[in-house]
Image (tube, rainbow, N blue to C red; front, side, top):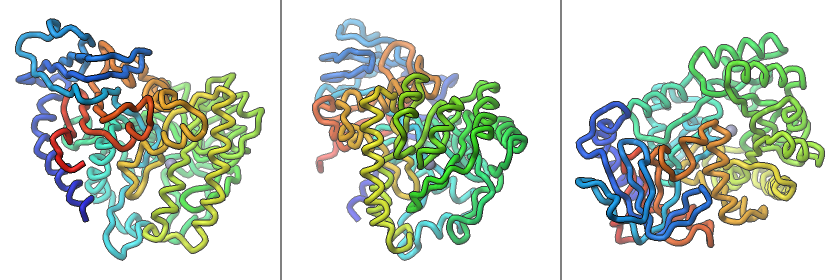
Length: 438
Ligand SMILES: [Zn+2]
């Protein structure tokens, strides 16, 4: 109940700011275009930890970072966050923003998903988008939606009609023909492709529809189903990878198990999602090729915590509890070997707002808090191909800033649980700095 009230307050607050946000769209005129944001400390993701940093923001971009108060242009609006540590806006490279459900009592989340028409789903998803922002996440790579709801949501956000993280979307993920994996839950028809010609056709369809990247499901496994049987063969995966790259798009490949992972890496995928029990040769190949690994450990924890409300069949806890250590162990091996990681939550249902808990698992897998933060900033930006605009606090970058209370380089939980203030593209979208209840 308390949580509901906080969320409602945040939601109303953000709604009130919708007007201001709309005025600050790129190309639109803004009355007060220059802001100077003061941080006690600032981790800029460019290798520098600043003391008493001032970030000068002009429109939706960062003009410069300085410690010199005299550099603040006359008439700039000053925002004093000197009690806090500044971070770049965080990036979650694996979400399903349109697979949002609320907690309507007695209505299993799985059922809600099949009951709602797309327009309702997109409208409801704005709440998940706000919770995502509250976690400090300003950019997401959204990996699979039905009916191009993701494209609609991306465009509504870019036009300032909906408040949420900027989205990079894939339309339909590619699936092989299969039997329903849950009663009433068929793979979205638009993504079904069997054999190389159909794979090429479906890749082209997503790009024609406006997708930013391609997603392919190369194994079974989702929700409480932790099987990882390979579904696409090497030739089909290679066809999807090459077609995506030919169009200048990146590709994310889902594989719960090691076989699909091995073929996805050899075929040249840009990122590999989930991938448990990978063999050493595949891990080495990832290091050699620079393939990003997005292990999505924490969503299994979320499923354990919420399985009854979601509507999983009995036995899900045991299955997921046995899976998590394998997931973590694979991440540990990959990190030790030097694989590049990007933070992906696989947030669905009510998990939005918990997006960055994955960072806690990365520290458990052997990363320092700073290495973990890189997976959600510079690494994630590189995976998006936006390393010159996102994931750092530096001149020319989007003015995506987060203020946290404490030292996230000493304790990763600070970045996860102590987000107090959020700016996206120069607009302040979350401000809890005046909250008395902490
Ligand atoms: Zn996913």
